[in-house]
Image 1 (cartoon, one colour):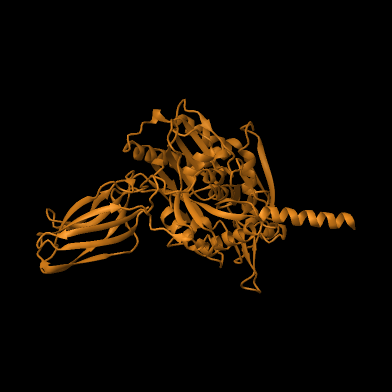
Image 2 (tube, rainbow, N blue to C red):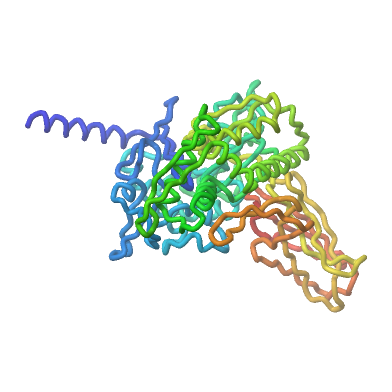
Length: 542
């Protein structure tokens, strides 16, 4: 009895000690696994937090949400779902998994069939993590990560999700930059980062500032001292420069579907089959395995019949190549390098190639990248927690100096051809915030024109890839048409013309900038009467 009381008192003292621990929390929300890391102030080493019953292991929480069919506000999170065997061979609309890829998307493929929206699933996971962590430690600063390809929409979602959290500082960093820091490379290094996650592949070239007496890089603050920021700060800018980047909404979960479809083409890809395909993928990705060794996984289909998934390493690699994975990585590499060249970068300046994310463990990926980056050393930090640990190293202060993933174009009237065209404003690789404004003179497109409508778009270059789901199977499709422009934000800014404009005659001069939040802002003047056009915001373009 005395021993029991002593143990309880010790636990109470330990819990009190933890609650008094003040520091920074990093959350890296992943498609398969969400990583939670805490670092106490003045402590050199971060801790992977164990958050039972959510955690599978310290720092790792399965990205799973399950809603009770009887109680709408009752949810299970992470490892709870696995231990209760709630992942079955039959579809369950109460279960949400692989939701990260759909956050911020205007269209969601039927492959995601949960009644819990992706945004709601992500919010539940982050809030439950926060509830568990804040009961253990005192979080002064929260650092979150976001993928490159959907940064704009994802960032907006994250900021809204975290608006109710009781924390003084919230900072945001893109995943490849965090991965660069997590690799432990020296300040001043230039590196290529491949982050191959469950639902996205992100590639970037990052220049880590610092070294030789220079300050180290920092993350973008979105809240400070409990107040939301407008992108302004009196602090001296310290940066991690992203010289070029590209992303694709394809990841390890899609490879699992390729394997399942290839080996059991007549079967519906149930959760159990996809889990077996994932296990097969992981075993075939181990180092030193013979090419011809066939690995087999037994699984029951939705009718209870016994089936086998059988594949060799050679067959696995052939499947990846047949589905266009290496070609897609080569396209991302070319895009990233071309963007970086606009910032005076040369491939031979690379110090290292950093591989993170579960998909980066596939030997074929490293072998292929090695052929593109001859003689450049590879760095392979712990693939799961590298991004979260790197996010901790980015001391929040102001922002990361970044570049546009894609360009920005303005829809306007072309006097020479007498038709509307998309005119490039900023190219992919353009650093932001911009150092000086871009000036454009616009003419009226009709007689007696009463206003000028401003619409911005995002170019999709010929040769780049997009992911389509055909009958539930992720398929890589190359964009084959030049100058495809996708309208951004569905936002139109209308500038009144007084007096009305006449066709083909210059009316207004506008100055465009990209501000600290990666939003396009304009101001200008009416050339006919010198009336000022006040600052207007065209929305986020990252």
